[in-house]
Length: 177
Image (tube, rainbow, N blue to C red; front, side, top):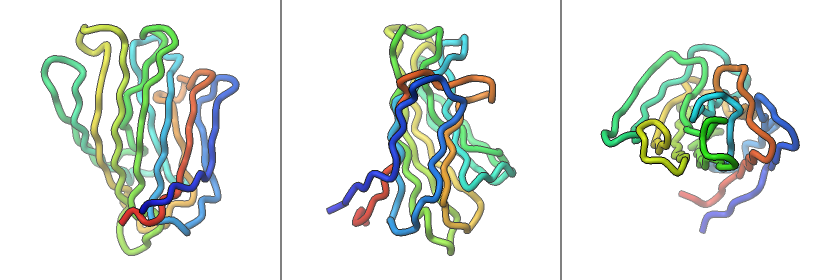
């Protein structure tokens, strides 16, 4: 049976561009980040991004399956300076709605392999208009064999902020196989 250990929890009391979890122990099998977030970007949606260990180099790959219209689509990329994965509502979305996201950092402390990430996110908006709502399933690789000891959660574009009451909880998972 898997054991979920809370490593850290943050509920924003004010807007913030990023949230960081530091000094992460290597004593777990996997990490899971659960979040409920919203952005102050003027649009309908924004993205939640990740960097690990302060790495701003071009060491992140991604593949995503999106549905935010009547036609699902996919995107892929290599050489990114962060993982771009998660839809979150922005200021133009239905007031007071927050997007949900579950992100797994698989075998994050294994120094023999690259770290894999798997995430799913969704944002509702009380709308059937294309690109006014979204679901995303994603995966990616951090092309480093270093154990992850820091996770930075970033609001897209660098000038956008997560709004007050956005929450982020990082768990260490043991026994999940």
